[in-house]
Length: 82
Image 1 (tube, helix red, strand yellow):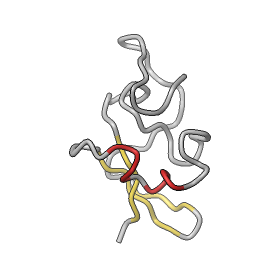
Image 2 (cartoon, rainbow, N blue to C red):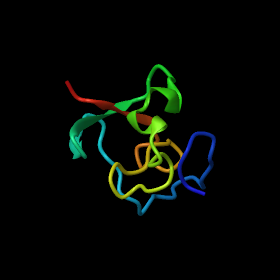
Image 3 (spheres, rainbow, N blue to C red):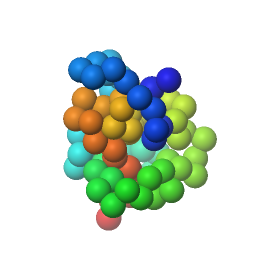
Image 4 (cartoon, helix red, strand yellow):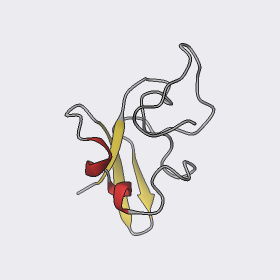
């Protein structure tokens, strides 16, 4: 399975799923969301999508978020852009 913290992938395997670049802002429903690198290891609990049915189910809007699925090998979270 791709997605979610704690998953693994083979070294050098690049995802074919869409991924947002760190710092990218995009519209989701009535919010503008921004992709942040999860440098403080806050995990899913700090992500906008954690409290929605979207989390870890459909990556077509926000893209993949965990390091094991991303080409840049960084965990990201999404927050409302102010």
